[in-house]
Amino acid sequence: MTDTDIACSGRRGFIAAALGTALAAALDARAAPLLGVPGTARLAAANAWLEIDLDVFDANLRRVRALAGDAQLCAVLKADAYGTGIDLVMPRIIAAGVPCIGIASTEEARMARACGYKGRVLRVRAATLDEIEAALPYRVEELAGNLAVAQAMAALAVRRRRPLPVHLALNSAGMSRNGLELATAQGRSDALALVGSDGLRVVGLMTHFPGEAPDDVLAGVRVFQQQADWLFANTALRRGDVQLHAANSFALQHVPESRLDMVRPGGALYGYGGTPKPPFAHVAAFKTRVASVQAFPAGNTVSYDRTFTLQRDSLLANLPVGYSDGYRRAYSNKGSVLVRGRRAPVLGRVTMNTTMVDVTDIPGVQAGDEVVLFGRQGGEQITQAEIEAWTRVILADQYSVWGALNPKFPRAR
Image (cartoon, rainbow, N blue to C red; front, side):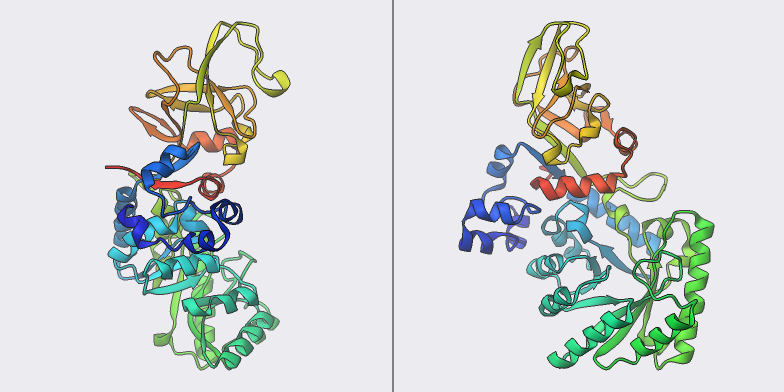
C-alpha cells in the first residue's frame, strides 16, 4: 500500500467488511476500488482510470496561497475534490497546513476527518436537515441562506445542546441560489431573525459570483460589503468575530478586492478556472489501454448507426472505455486520443463500453499500450479547449464524472 492508501483507508473498507466487495462497489460507484488492495493490482485491473499528479496539486496550492496574500485559504474539495479524490489530496492539504476546506456532501466531510484533517470544514452549498444532522460528528460549519431551514437547524442545535456554526449566505452578487436577498424588506427581516436564532452561531458572511466578468464581480463585492456593513450595524454581530468571504478561483486571480478575509478557490487547485499566465496545470489525466488492434478494409462502417465509413484499408484500436465510464458519446467522430505520443481520431459512435480509434498511421500500436483520453503524452496533449469544443460542455462537468466513475491513482515518480 502507498502512504496515501494508508493515510485515508477509510473510504470503503468498512463497507466491504460488512457487505462484500462486489456489493460495496455497486453501492459506492463514486469511489476508487478498495484501498486495501495494492495500487499496482488495482491499476492493472482497471479499464480506465484517472492519474493524479500530486506534485502539480502542491504547486497549484502554493500559487493559490501566494495570490491570497493575507486572506485565509479555504481549499474547495467538493465533488470528491473535483473528481481527483479527497483521499489522495488530503495528505497534501494537511502537510501544507491549509486551515479550512470546502465540501458539499457529508461523506466528503467524513473522508476529510478519516484522513486526519483537524481544520475547519465548511459546507459550500445548502443542505437538507438530515445531511446537517449526519454531519454533526464531523464538525461541519453549515451554509445558512434560508430562514425556515435555519430555524430547523437552530432547533436541532438546541436539542443536541451544541451551538451550530453557520456562514450566512447573501445574494449580493445575484446568483439567486443559496443566499438571502437583502435588497428586499423580507430578506432583511429574515436576516435579522436568522442572526438572532438560538442555537446558531454566525461565524461567516459569504456570497458567490454567477459570472467571470471582472467589473460584474467587483460590483458584487461592493454590494456584499454594503450588506455586511448593514448587518453589523443592525445586529449583535461583531466584525472581529465574523469572516467575510466571496472569492472563487476567477475572482481570486482577477479581482483583488474580492479576497476579503478568506478565499474559496476550487478549480484553480486542479488546473481549471481563470486565465492566469502561465495557466494552472491540470492535476488529472484520463487514461485507458488498447484492448486489441485489428485491420478492416475500405468501405467498412464503424460502430453503431454506420456514421463513419472507412475510406482506406485501416488499422483500428479497440479501447475498453465508453460513455458508461464518462467518455461521452459527443466525442463520436470528433475526438482524438493519444497513443505512442501521437493523435488517433475517434471513428464512429462512442458506445457504452467501447471506443474505436484509427491507428493506421501510428507504427507499432499493440494491445496493452497506454492511451491518453485527456492530458499529455510525449510532446502531444489533449487540451481543455479541445474537450470543451468537442462536447460543448465545460471540463469540470466532465472530469468530476470521470472521477466519480473511474478509479484514481497517484502518478508514479
